[in-house]
Image (cartoon, rainbow, N blue to C red; front, side):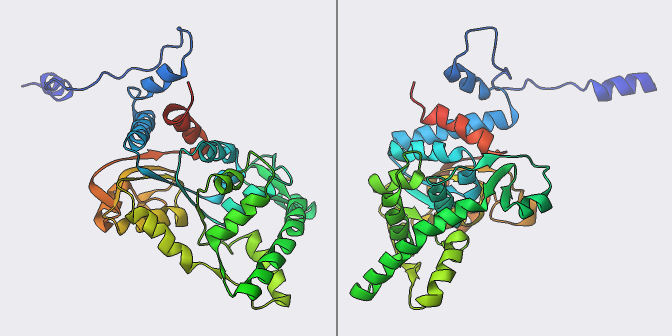
Length: 327
């Protein structure tokens, strides 16, 4: 066998037929249809196919009337995903919310003052001098927090008076519900959560501006407390009492672990959708894949699950359009 024949044999190695669906993208020459557009994601490949799989899994959650846990980090609320999440809560498409402190406080702050777009490449020293805080390419003037303090101090005072009168320490979820009842903005997640009796769990409630305000308040009222442990039982009981559960996690961090750990008690989630930019190589919760959750018992062996890699501000609205959107 000469070298040319050997090269041809190696390069053009005979193969067996590959069975499966043909890879094909959306045909933009037709009248645009969001339903057909998302359907074609299924045959596009890469993360587009995973996105379509996420839509299908969430549809299964809804058909099976699973209890749907939605977890999201604070930056989701910093962005315009706040209104997307509020839509889901308004229409009772999800049953439980788990977020970080920013997910609570920034939702409330936006009822008072808007956040504005900047860029990722601004002069942060100049921003600091101007009293403007940057979250990626989103700007938050310190004036937002000044207005927030005006709301929170009377709120703390009311809770403190109740605590002294009844001896009862408020839970973090009740804290969030009461804040939601104060909100007057129908774009607010907490506004709809409070009115639709959807619990908002935030075990990291003090890790943000709320903690700063609480620090100021506790200088004069050191006996003021919030009960974090009370929500642990409530969240786990919701999972335990559910025939089926589904988890939709935007990002990772504490909300992801809190939801999956609560489901550990019932033998794991039945449906799981992760949307993340995290990588599994560093062993973080944010980067951990659904397969890893099986090893912990946080996801059931037979669960339907998918990991969608990418920016949730791009991916999640498309998933909502496919799984929750109104035709």
